[in-house]
Image (cartoon, rainbow, N blue to C red):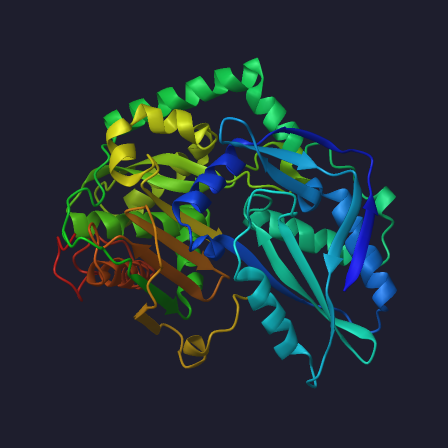
Length: 452
């Protein structure tokens, strides 16, 4: 075990950010299964580095990003406060590899680090470990809590760690002027509270014009509802989505989100609805180096229009405006929709999330067997818990598309999830060769409409 010491210029305590509060509510609602909201990581270290150099880079990373040295302490009212430690140490297990590559040991360490939930208390919400082979570091692994990162944060951490390993002087890296403590202070300011009131009004009017319609009816009244999950892998679908985006002069995100919305509309027989969409909340230039859970959910009004291409061009400007509803205090938002909050435990009762990657998606043996244009869609292990009606993820590296849908079978069963994900695949395959008129039945040939 190595004690990684750090000493930075600031240590302070203050309220949590809205993003941290929403993540903590998710953690509490899913106990004892909250460990699945950890973010495991496994990073292959370049050859030729000494242990001293790697530890120095890690120490500089912890000093630079306050979230890595933040504890979350119970407040008197049952909420949390974030406490940034200015000077201290982080335990980093250093394990000698017994296998040729050390990968088995690294995976075991990652599994152990991510198998336990993070709790309120003095522990930092970052667990780090190193695997060395013949004295040389080979792997950095561990797990981070979503109270200190979102997906964009992981990219920022990797970028900065890579720069520090390459010999960058941490004092010469661009200073970070907006850390989670600063974000929380801004949210609690008069300006932040005024912005919150405007956001709440937009949620109210948004659901008045685009009703909250997705999977509202109970389809399975069993006393202990299960939480099925379905996954899709599609080879070459990212290329086809890009061709549609180029043709319509939009970003690929609009194509993927429109395909997901079209599939949801098709199985529910809807022409208009409000869809809750994950937004990175990174439009402010100050957030380009911010490590913290800025991402929250925004409201996207969906109209199917006359065809799929029409739907894409309608979705695109709506996505550009998602930021207007995607930064909020969850307690205040829940109070606006008491009926949904009482039923589900939260007013954010579903989400759709698209993520584009510059690097290939992680290897999956199911993809290796696919030819261009082929896909596999199958039921996978259920999630142990969720308070959402459903969640829908669509990721693409420009070629392979990975889809995942999970939910509460009281509202949506596994067969309907298959229809949604296969529908996304089939619609994009068809639309790559030309527009598809609504209700896009010509693309959705595998299932009967109106299952949801």
